[in-house]
Amino acid sequence: MTTRCAHLGFARILEQARDMALAMSWDEWAGQDAVALATLVRNGEVTPAELATQVAAGIARTNPALSAVIEVFEDVVADPLRDGMNPKGPFAGVPYLMKDLGPTLKGRLQEMGSLLMRGNRAAADTYLTARIRAAGLNIMGRTTTPEFGCCSAADNPAVYVTRNPWDTDYTTNGSSAGTGAMVAAGVLPIAHATDGGGSIRIPAGACGNIGLKTSRGVFSIAPHASDLTGLVSIQGCHTRSVRDTAAFVDACRGGAPGEFMPYWMPAEPYTDLIRRDPGRLRIALSHEWGDYRATPHFVRELEKAGRFLEDLGHQVDWALPAVDFRAAFAAQTTCYISNFAQTINNLLAQRGLERPPADLVEPINIRIWEAGIGTSYTERARMQAVFNTTSRAFGAFFEDWDIILTPVTALPTPRIGTTEYLTISDNPSVLDWFGNLWRQFAYTPLANLCGIPAISLPMGTQENGLPLGIQAQARQANDGLLLQLAAQIERAMEGQWNAGRRPGLHVTRG
Image (cartoon, rainbow, N blue to C red; front, side, top):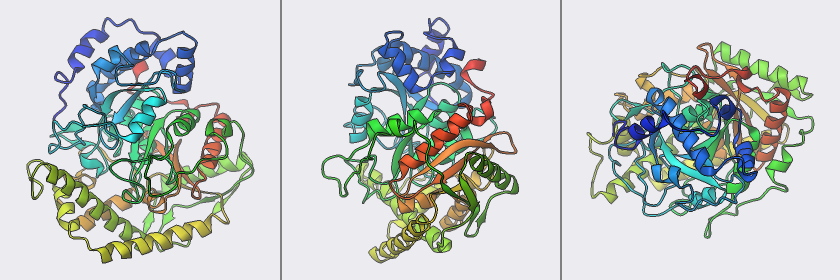
């Protein structure tokens, strides 16, 4: 499944893009978030078809260098209403790209970054797909992801290599790789992402986007899984403004019939809540996450963020939850290995296969399947017990603190071709391979384990010049507080995330 530009319409779009009459200049386009674009549509100043044409042109302009979009749905570009998008929804036809993993689109390809899944078409929309379309988002293409979402970057030359628009020698991190690149490059203001251990927040952090992982009980993963069976999986998006993130959560949240747990609602819509600053918050800083430590430069960037929040009037100090981090990461590893093994096994069963073919499934995913397919109920029960104690330790911590702030990652974003974090690695040990992941991505996965909200905000810079996300986490169902704080920061920065910088590869730069 190499990048099949001609087959999937890119050649035609590239040709057409030269003559397209666009609704806006690229500088005008890059200054609009999704809420602003929707307002223009409602005011009759632009149409959903014109917005889709602009995004298609932006993809044509940037994707040859980034390899972030697998497919553009040309029929939906021509007719945004074709698949049932609701033009009266709050987003009024704003274009949207779907990560090639998670929610399915009836009749459309979903290949999950895998040669095994080449040509796979979905039989039906999932519940969240319907919510996204009802919100007025025009799903017009697919973005890249590593195989089954299980590694740090979409970086496999046999499939595709997604590059970071800030510096194309680097990855975007993962697994929401293509989404991170397209939003950062200014192609569109909002796109789909998923997060089973940081896959919304980590690429948001490396690409300079806003990435919220919500609490459990917000976005449904029906009908094929639930918060009980999926356990750590969360849906969401990347944006460049807090109000876009808030509007997406408001419009797309809610459970499908038959959920195993109640789906909660906040006291007021987040789009209203974020207009007010939060009160004085007790904010903890930490980079010492069990055995894992951030680089000295990352610690300085965290301290800088802490001083910024002190200047906003918040109480800031160093503190850490009383968590057995070694036990927590061991339990998280058990969860990942057993979950991914079953995911792969279900896909094999659909194809009448007894084991993953070595020429179609990447080496680490084969080893994960081998290690996890026989996981016992006793092992899973032991894992769940650690999930319980870890979640309650975070709960106790949030009795004394409102927010805990960390870097999004402990180590710098890898260069393209750094295989130790990839599922094309030749590492013979699955446990050692996961240990490499935790050293790099230490701060994000426990939020999934505990079901608490976390957000990556583009407040820092890595030594290599790439953005560094600063992560804020809060108690379960305090998603609104994270968005309130993010909006307060955004206002204090006069909207200038990433210190007002844009990536070197951006729609405005040609």
